[in-house]
View 1 (cartoon, one colour):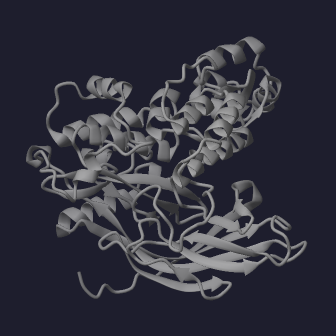
View 2: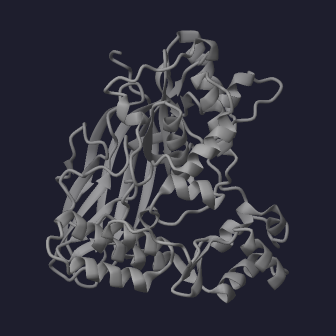
Length: 474
């Protein structure tokens, strides 16, 4: 929860507006933005940043749509016996996310569902307990065992590959754009990452002629254009194939040494506002978790285990959050990107290089989702994967105990990387504000009249596992 009485420091006009928005003082923020824009000499960058705070308020009101009665009604659809007193107690405990916006208490539209993920007491009252919707890779299975076994037997870090053909389809709502206007679309596209995913190949696109960004693009996309037709949805699609390798590194803590921070590694131990800032609260949390540990791998294990304990819950749109790592530290819950950003910030604070990866995950069955994870650098092993949302696995007595830490140094072969960093520019450049300012997993669309936000279109992934081609080298 954000208090309405939060003091706003005497800072730049942009920071002043951000603080007012975070405090739920939307009317004051709008007045402050108007005043700042009227001043002579406003730079284009400051103007864009101020205007985005107006857009952020609009998006927040799309996320915070429920009053208390509506939030209670949604909770009672699953747990009819929940009392007003229980609601108020859970609300006081921060389990039902809300903001006070210009004096009105508004609840996050996903807060009623999140409550049952955050409170065992609330979950126990559901009439029909929900079936698990977890990725099959979140539980220890033969894929993990095979990856470790093959890595140990061969001495290779890239093992047990999958080859997959994927189609993403994006559908813009009918009449979201006037007929005859050109819609520009950026659909996420896999990066070529030796040893992780290889042989990336565009198979088809609709319309034809997709412009795939260079392989070096850190948030890679396939760019398409199509004119809108009256009364009809506008559809874009891209199909591609690639081979994905599971990864496993048998990390021996006794061999891990402090990393020499070279110019190439320096950015990955640095702060990067707005989402990676070494705040006093972050430092205090880190000291409490790390204690006197000095071994980089043991530090990483402690931080990984601590963030793993933060429960998963459905998240607000990232573009509405001014600092993802700080938000997750204080909210008491987080989704994959929020948990990952917090872990990256903590690792960097402790001098351990860490960076972002994200994309899409799938399964042998019907499960698929967008997902975020990361990498950390451990000398002498180099860059290794981490997925704190999948977290620690639970080996049985017949399993190798090391499988507990599979996702701190290992990764399954059921995920596609679109992004090797966050908040990076597109090729070709986008003219208007992005719908997702941090990640790039669903796509982005715009026309000459502005950005098309997520409420104006939808997306879907389909996939087919194919025989793995013979490797020709490496």
